[in-house]
Length: 277
Image (cartoon, rainbow, N blue to C red):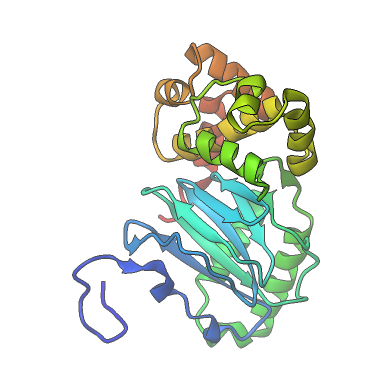
């Protein structure tokens, strides 16, 4: 790899060195990144443009003030322009960043995870191959218009973990993110943060929109998707999340996403295996 100065890098460069948004001359621009070639960056930042992070392999975890989103293969997380965020990628991640000019597409005003159809994925990858001069071509302009129209039609995926800055909820969330196998009950957590169980139950729903049990299951799902996409086995993930058996974990996964982990990732990786060939 060669740096912008023309000198070889002695270590992987930050991925930000690959992104120059000043080169955009149309409603959108895209860039493919293989994180084997770059140093992952987890610092908080923001863009004037909206950003779609499309995972082709591995997974990306995106954090904003209101929640945590996971981006497994064949999905994308949408981050509106001006929203501070940070991204954590698995070491095997290959992603495409799609930057969209403000007002260029009818996309949500808040962060969300979107399912990405094979046709739309191919359009985004085609845009990532364009040169600076291509961006001024009438054919490319039509391609981008169709791409952005298609993106606006993509359904949302329920891959968000809502978070809160309330001190008591934030304390519980930080503890469970650090040790997701912690199986303390709502009553035990209430004692830990010095409130009544009834008050904590009400506060959890008020701050996250979910009961404690549903919130913890969503936490497990988000972590499981990230770890499985990163190459961990189902058995290891089940153990790390504190499930008594692999079967119990698979039941939770299937209830949430409608299929088993092996089928979920098998279908998605089959659809994306050619994207970097």
